[in-house]
Image (cartoon, rainbow, N blue to C red; front, side):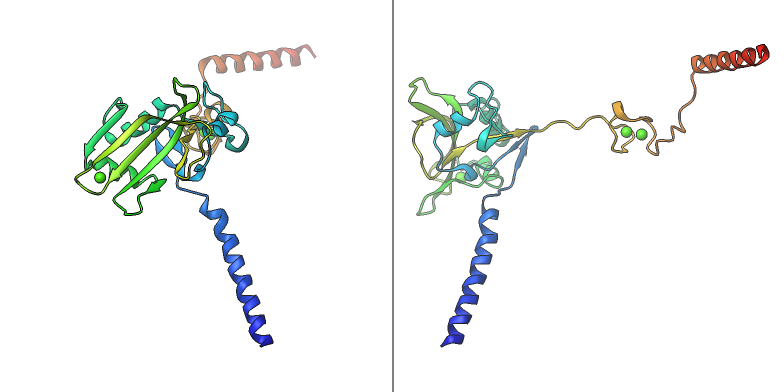
Length: 233
Ligand SMILES: [Ca+2]
Ligand SMILES: [Ca+2]
Ligand SMILES: [Ca+2]
């Protein structure tokens, strides 16, 4: 009986350890790189209101602080560019509806859906954009849905309004990180050109450097000067 309890305690501890390992990992999703932006999975920020993002991110630029430091909250147009990369249609119309479109599948091979119908005939991703609707109590959401049934159309929408204070389980935000181009490093030695003592020489002995005529002339002048001062002594 005592042994049984001990075994049970040990077993429970093991379960707790595994759960602790799983919890932090479950929040990390694959970043989707599109046109110089690293998009965060919308599933990581679900059940968060427009107002919450708005208090952390700048309304004009989308640059975020607080819990979203380092991210930019996308505008409707920027999510349009993201959708365009998958739909192949530029600019992305406010509503794009196509029967059983190929782009829907392509999109969901990169992004996790935030909502799936219980009867399993469609999946959807919904996320806040930083735009306010004309009615100031509403925020815009961008949404893409994929119907598995050929009878229904796949849909990409850029202007659904929802209450800014609403917290819904399938609604997060479109957040991205701007990719900064790495500085130029012609010789590939890991030292950027503007800090590299030998920008075209990877072993940094500047062996390829040929003195310019101007440098040679200065050197000759210097030697002549040295000779003159020695003669004076
Ligand atoms: Ca479909
Ligand atoms: Ca270099
Ligand atoms: Ca170098």
